[in-house]
Image (cartoon, rainbow, N blue to C red; front, side):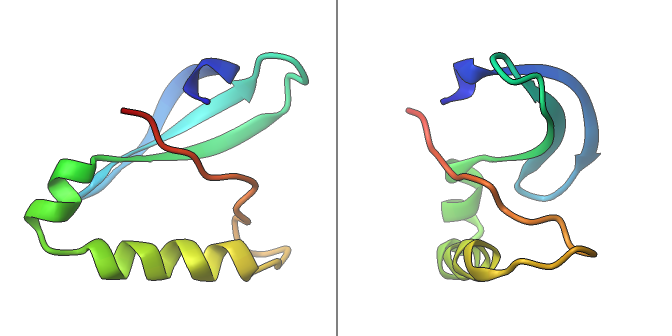
Length: 75
């Protein structure tokens, strides 16, 4: 969940939200966390494309591409 991470800096902004530099509170490992607003995604009628992106990233494993480690949502 969101509480498992320390949020450090915003490293990017886009049409649906932000990308944060975060560290895991227990392991101290660094990650980039993409935070997206469900309301904006629904408003822009992009639900299908976002779900497709998540599906592709979950299956992808490449050393030159940021690989997805986990996905979660909150309220």
